[in-house]
Length: 183
Image 1 (cartoon, rainbow, N blue to C red):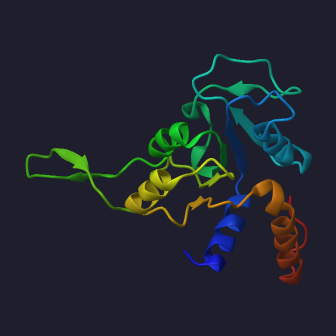
Image 2 (cartoon, rainbow, N blue to C red):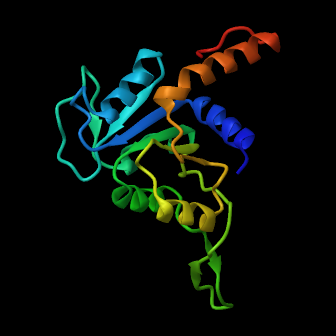
């Protein structure tokens, strides 16, 4: 994907109605999952924390933590930042964007298709793998699933790049005469 397409995907990501951060620890302010979660909160963006396969923990300054991606409400309107080891991130990505089912025979049996960009109402708007959270296996699945326009990674970082993107989006809205938004 070209750098301009990645840039547009990042802006599409940030236009979501809500955000979720998937991380391992969340409650430790020195950890990147906590920093990314607070990046959204500090900008007034609605965000949820998700600690997959972990027992419920105390909330983060009044924010409860979910323990499974299935608990994310309105998933199709949610952009998700993933800050977790790729060995955990790949199975999560496969659950978020499963291979589509297609008819394999006249008997009505269904099998997984190796390609397809159809989205279901229960797939997230976008996923952003923060630095260190993606690897070659993740990108192989992204290509196989045909979701290159929905997944961001390869070192891109919302913590580093997000403010400039939000400002650019705000400037575009003002130039279009649409005034202020929640950005």
